Length: 131
Image (cartoon, rainbow, N blue to C red; front, side, top):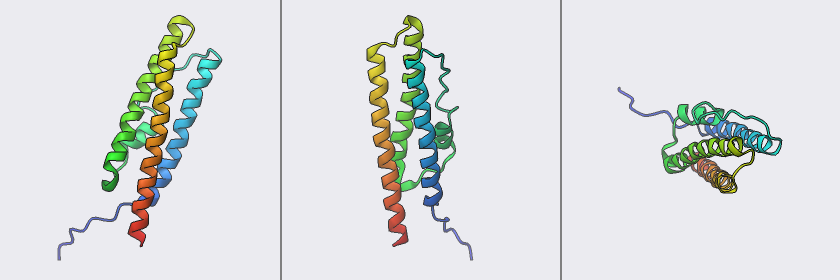
């Protein structure tokens, strides 16, 4: 008998790893803010170099959360581009441009909301599979 049944998606592992890399993302965000406040030089990793981006690149996407996952990935890529622009504007003029800073801050807020939506959707889907 040929079993074509796929193994169920491991939501516990996904949720645990997502929570961990979200922590690392917020640590990265804090480093960006510190570099602005204390006039420090900061190399901005690409989306693919940081722990969060590596998680997004290697992780199986839960089918039910495809839209939320892609929203998080897109916002994460935009944040890295915006952080690079922010640090470059500060390095060029010794002061971050307000417009660039506001964009970076807005992306962080959107990113946090998208992460919460993805985590909530994954938890709700997982709960349904356990019922």
